Length: 247
Image (tube, rainbow, N blue to C red):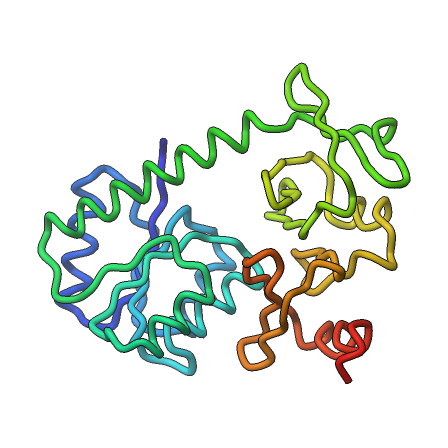
């Protein structure tokens, strides 16, 4: 598996260590920046498969805020690297759904194992997603349920069981409590096919079943659905709260 890794680290010593190990392990090093502004700009030039991100960085946003901003546009896996071990920092960072944590100071072995285990996990997810679903045909869609074609099998999914849908720009993922399916349709197309009184866009990349919303984190602009954090844009926040009768 070819893996492109981007680094966000403002301590030169650690940045050098990360770069050397990434290249030593044979992964593609997309670049290194020390601040949130440059990191966001880099995302527009080409997405990495994995980001190694320090929490305490230069710029307008810290690493946690930066991760949230990136995830509002792109679901890129992130490994947080930090010397901060307090509960508040861990709680804030956890809400962004990082794939791993690495505490400073670390040695080369710890760094290597963390990256390699994460890459293996990403490879397994990619293989599972690729094998999961080939298509979602319009003929398989019904009022209360639809069928997703998985190789030579049709899986029946009840609309009421769908938590949310997520777009990565190329495919869409249908998340249920039991399983995640990949479909080869755009989020806009899926939005047209699902009942508008049940599903709502909270973000350009996420369509949420409002009946499954457990809570809304107003501070971090997240909707909690089935225990998962789903981003919500400023434009959608008031509309969602109104639908939920919370204002």
